[in-house]
Length: 129
View (cartoon, rainbow, N blue to C red):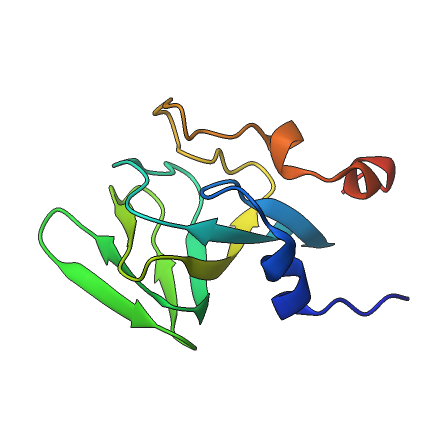
C-alpha cells in the first residue's frame, strides 16, 4: 500500500494541460494537472467529469453560464454538456475524476490534446490502471 501526497505530485508536473493519472478507483481515473489560460470547448458525450481545485482559481465556461472555482471547490460537468475549462490564476492545479473511457478533449483534437497513454506514467501502465 502506498501513500501519495497530492501537493508533491502536482508540484512535480511540468507541462500545462497534460493530466497525469495518479490512481485508479474502480472504473475511474484520478488525475492531476496544472492549467493555464484555456483548454478548448469540448464535451464528453457519455461521461461526467469532476474538477477539484487544489491551488489557484479557474472557471468552467458553459454556453449560457460560468462556474467560478477557487481552492477547495469541486464541480461536476454533466455528460453531454459543452464546456471550456479556463485557468484564472497564472498556474492552477486541479484534480480530475473521470471514467477510464473519457477522452481528454472529447471529440475535439488540438495541440493540447493528450492521449490516455500520455496521461499514464510508466508505473500505471505496468500496473494496468
